Amino acid sequence: MDRRRGAAVLYVPLVLAALAALFPIFWLLAGSLQTTQKLYKGSELIPRKPQWSNYVQAWVDGRLGVYLPNSLLYTVCAVVGILLVSSMAGYALARIEFRGRSGVMFVILAVLIIPAPASFIAQYKLMLSFGLTNSRLGYVLVLITAGIPMATLIMRGFFANLPKDLEEAAAIDGCTPFSAFARVILPLARPGLIAVAVIQGLNVWNEYLLALVLFDDDDLMPVQRGLMNFVSSETPLQNILLAATAISALPVIVFYVLAQRQVVQGMSSGALK
Amino acid sequence: MAYAFLLPALALLAVFTFVPFGQAILLSFQEWDGVSPSTPFVGLANYARVLHDSIFWESMKIVVVFGLAGFFVGNGISLCMALAVHRIRRGKALFRTAFYLPGVFSVVVVGMMFSWLLAPKVGILNRLLDVVGLSALQHNWLNDPATALPAVAAVFIWFHWGFGFILFLAGLQDMPAELYEAASLDGARAWAKFRYITWPELAPVTTIVSLLTLLAALQIFGTVQVLTNGGPAYHTIVPTLRIYEEAFTNHRFGAAAAMSVIFGGALVLLAGLQLRLSRRKR
Image 1 (cartoon, chains in turn orange, blue):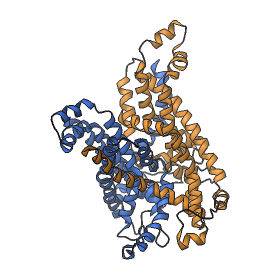
Image 2 (cartoon, each protein chain N blue to C red):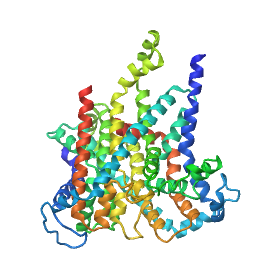
Image 3 (spheres, rainbow over the protein chains, first blue to last red):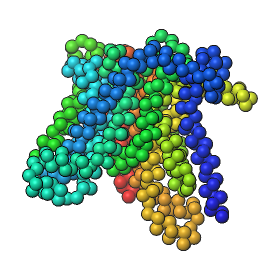
């Protein structure tokens, strides 16, 4: 009895914390549906006459029809690239005995520790000398590289847990090492691939610093960078700004609600392994 | 054979991570305006300039505030909430979903969201204070030197604590139930169970969470840039923002590189130190 009441008391801070976590998002959405006058007189909790036209105006004025497809393109390309490169590397590290394995492992762990603030200036210089600033290809390559260390470690963990004799069986069936990897091993590591895709997808979609440094061509910017452009351009109306922010956040909210189990699992497997 | 699998990853890391890392060190001894092809060597001039850049050193102090806020307040909330969610029966998934939701947004979205909530006249926080008769407590939160830093730090905590929560919760769920059953038989109280079982068992997770939170806090950039851009009068300036300004606003890429060598070096040292300390403890 005493124990039960103890557990019930826990709901008080939990509900308060949940409100604190959710309210700002709710308030952003509420504000994005008001008229400007309402906004300044005191935004309603739930807009009585939702101004959907704000979203149309935000879409047009904020050039979201350009930025969102850009972001989608960068995210898909970078995630596919990360999956390919990291699954191969993770496979070698987990299942092939070779000289220098611990050295390669050390290199990958070391890269994880190199902080972005230490290298983004030089990264800009390098990309400039390659002619890869204001370049879709350049941005995607940098994004893939940024994702490699964490993704490789996660994939390595998944490959290491697969049964030992898979490759031998595949070799008996006439598979080359590469086809054994592609046809036998990779399909078995699907949960790992999904976890990596989900986490890296969010990371890439939300990336801001490199997009800020590498792009000044408005037509190539991903949505985070483009949104900041819109904010600092003229002085857009507050409700239109909120609507533009909401549009850029909605894909992430939908994605999270649909894939939250993978997000949570990927997050903890990435950090704890 | 193995290297055929490793080649793409190693090649990309070499070109886009190691070369820039080395180049950052090289550039810190050179002068470059960001455009011209000439980058003459200037010896230690950049470091001398950085040494006298009081704003840079101020930013190093300020970022420690973010580090401490994330470390103690953020992680404290994460741990308490994880313990609470772990104990309840109903609604676990619901709370987990809600608590991590802020963490999936971009720094730009979070910045825009809180610029609106904390706005001086129309912001909901000041409005609520007015409604409950506490209008004396109203502030121009993000523009008042007294409140700007605590306000941005609070936003950072809101943004980031869900991450630690997820990891703590995963750690709690992995803990063997037998330990607790044995303790219950011995008549251990809740606090004793936490002190002598949960806390030591959770130590590896705590280490990782502390390290990752600390590194995220110290590297904070976008959240600050969107909310205050380092203002008012550099009251919220952080190193990464200062490095960015020095390069892209002041066009002193050499000095910016020197700053990133100093700051990046400090971060690497800190990460190494914390990992070593936690390893010795075990």
